[in-house]
Length: 187
Image 1: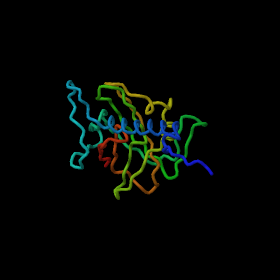
Image 2: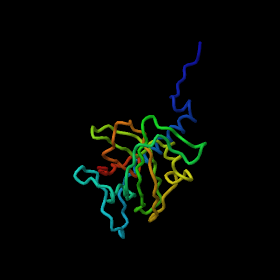
Image 3: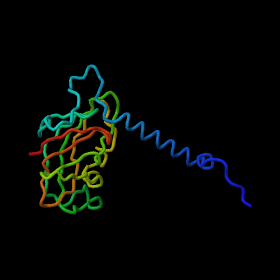
Image 4: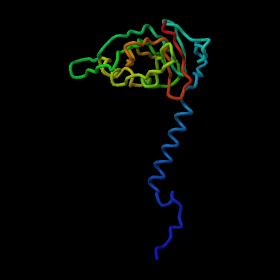
């Protein structure tokens, strides 16, 4: 007769329990830290809002959390991107390059992740950034994947793969996956 296990699952699987616990703590910490407006009392920037009534336009600044975004243009119609013959990616439809400057207006370093940025067409369809194409399109491949220190800014293009017959009308930009985001009218 087999002896019944009287201990609970977490006690029997200690290592897995620790891993799960660390994962949960990480998710909670990320959610608590992302998307908070800057509390720097010397800052002259307005707090972030993501209401449709306050959608920014090309050339205007728009704040979300620790980042101040300025979209300078959007260029569509590219069939491929890359910095050399070995690092080239071809679009399923067409590549649209969202040319943007991002300044850290917070009080600590923050990473801009291209996969947290989106484009929308006039019908409201949402397009995600193509992280690999964005990296290949960046001369040294690191602009969007390094921390941006307070007061510093980076400029470059975030690459989106959209159907050839579509035109993006709005960009939604985020300082983190958990922030509310800010919209920029591209028309």
